[in-house]
Length: 265
Image 1 (cartoon, rainbow, N blue to C red):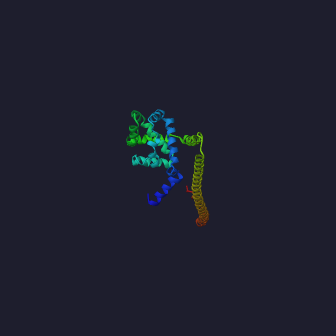
Image 2: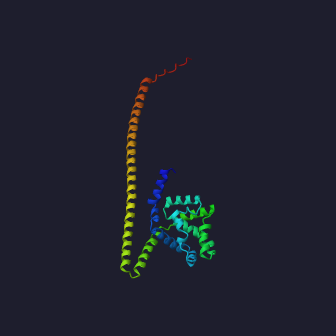
Image 3: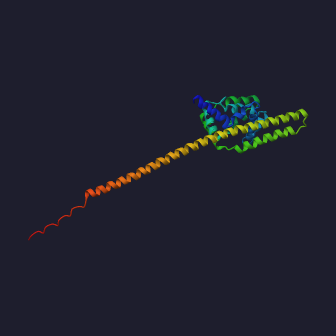
């Protein structure tokens, strides 16, 4: 891509696809994503989840770079390009699907390791070395998965747990002030998010209005062209009728043939 096209594509990823949220200073979205991945791992690969929990290995130890770089930091470029294609098609939840598929397909090998260092090293170093068959298998599995409802439920669950964690312990005045400040900060961020969504929506509306205007203009031109063709057809039909009349006048009635003379005896 050229510079302008590449910038527009980056803007689309950050705003329309929502990836911008995970790069904010507090990294709260990344924390939510790590919680969602952990819960999905619990749902789809319980034995692997238990094995990682037993060695105190959370997703943040190995999966954070996957989300922050869309797998570009550790995986082959060809595979990363395929992941981007799927993100443009299905949205950012593709990252969760790819992560689940990769962990699930390498589960037998991960379960063979029995300590934190070797497990994390395997996931970071060995797992990304994908062959063509494994790459195609992962992509096929991504298209078969539907986790959108689970992701929404686990995001709500994360916020509820955070609130319960705060409410479960008595707060001093300073802690209450901190809580209020965090709440205000969260509300401000939500307002910014809504403002960004509104701006994106307004941009889409303007684009759609411009498209409608172009279509209406095109429709008007087509109607004018159709009317002109109909007039031309009518004129041609009249000309053909006149020519047929003239041909009929020129040819006139056919001469009558005299009967044959009788043959004498």
